[in-house]
Amino acid sequence: MGLHIGSIAPDFEQDSTDGTIKFHDWIGDQWAILFSHPKDFTPVCTTELGRAASLKSEFAKRNVKMIAVSVDGVGDHKKWIGDIEDTQKVKMNFPILGDPDRKIAKLYDMIHDEANNTLTVRSVFVIDNNKKIRGMITYPASTGRNFTEILRLIDSLQLTDSHKVATPVDWKDGDDCVIVPAVQDENEIKKLFPKGYEAVRPWLRMTPQPNK
Ligand code: BEZ
Image (cartoon, rainbow, N blue to C red; front, side, top):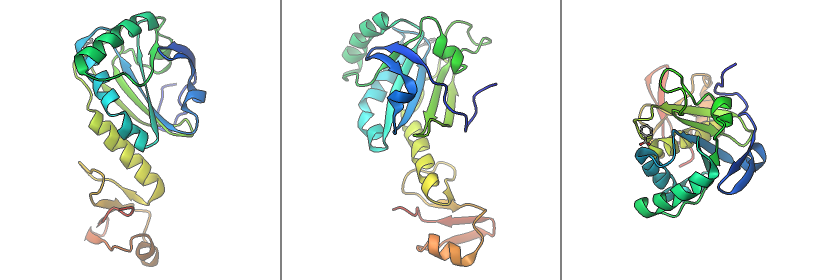
């Protein structure tokens, strides 16, 4: 069966640049992003890892740990890190899992045979503190991911966990939100959204972000 939003993220034990990682134990009671790289010493991956490292404090603010995986071994990863740090002017600050046997790539369905039957696509799994997959993004090897978008996704997930809102197109933290259709009772609406709301349609109700 494939992995879906709501599935428990498969657990594994694997070598990484920070030593052996038991994935669920490593996540602990935080959130995590697990993201794949097609291969070591490749240009797009190098820029992505540099960007991710530079955003570590933004992920930490959201209680999210980062972990990358690439199909080469940890020995190669360690050599590659030198190049990442040199070229992207960052200090690498999160682990990269070795995956020469494609164990994790297969577990997380990161190899899409029709694209390439040995290298992974660019997958991102957002995993919450209950080890549930909350979001997935998949890009081809030729397109670098947007880490600001990954942070935006996490902001939306964490906001909608605690408030009865959803986030509209292009929303970013601080923008107006949508009141979820399940909330219909006028007294409940007043209690939940004391800043008020605008009913553009009875089923399209906008409210200021409740936790701002
Ligand atoms: C890259 O990271 O630059 C890359 C990796 C595999 C295929 C194409 C590009």
